[in-house]
Image 1 (cartoon, rainbow, N blue to C red):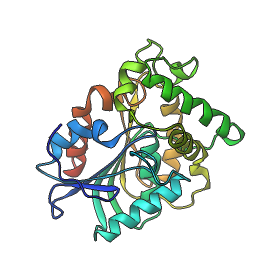
Image 2: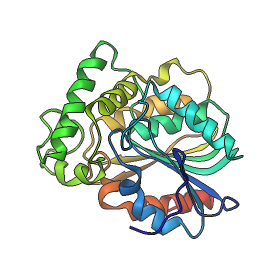
Image 3: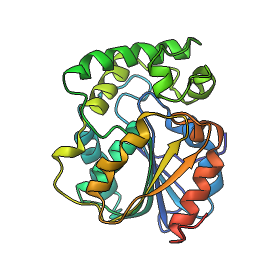
Amino acid sequence: MMNMKKENSKLHIIGGISKPKVMLVHGAGFYWETCFSRIIDDLKDRYCILIPELEGHTHNPEEYMVSVEATANNIAKELLKKDIHAIDVVYGVSLGASVAVEITINCRINIGNLILDGGQYESMGEMTEQYSNFMADAFLKLLEGENLASPVKENMGYSSGNDVEVLQPLIYKQITRKALLQAFLAAYSYDLKSKQIKIDSHVAVIIGGNEAYAAQCMPLLEEICLLSPKIFEYPNRGHAEVLSKDPEKIAELILCFSKKDMKL
């Protein structure tokens, strides 16, 4: 692990505050430092890297997630406390993608470019609690080396059975079931259909070629974007697998967006 100067707050700041800014938002059950170590290493000399911790995703958590909206608001407040009003590129993975969208929608922070990797953008309604409990238990089992159950495994793009190999390294080893449950409840309650504000940021969407759900979200995302989202599909990859196996590709995408060059 590289040497990193970390703030004592839940917003980690790596690099000089005067540099162009990149924010990385981790997913439900994930740990920021293990998720983003390679990306940080690739970008730390050029950018000020901002990494918020989702509530509950730390040792002895004092609070847990309530909603995507509340978490986005908390992150915006932390940024403003640091006199950060604009960010060049925000990358969010899984639940972090939903949080990134909400930070952009609430307009307290000016987001130039948004990279979304496998977020949840439509409420699961009456199934929210049942599915959240199921996923909380499933993530704890992943830490123990147990595969996801079907059809969740297939929907997330892991029909070949490589879900433990891909997801286990991203999951916070000390995560509690309560933290997982609250995070999944927030994720599966979030719904872009209720949002009236349009996003004027440049938006890129990362889709693993094996994911079933990610592509289905595109019409909903397109409705809230003033500019058509650019899709980057990675063949033979499942949910968050690009981050786990090919993080350098995400760093390259961030570099391209920060230079306003959308061609890879």
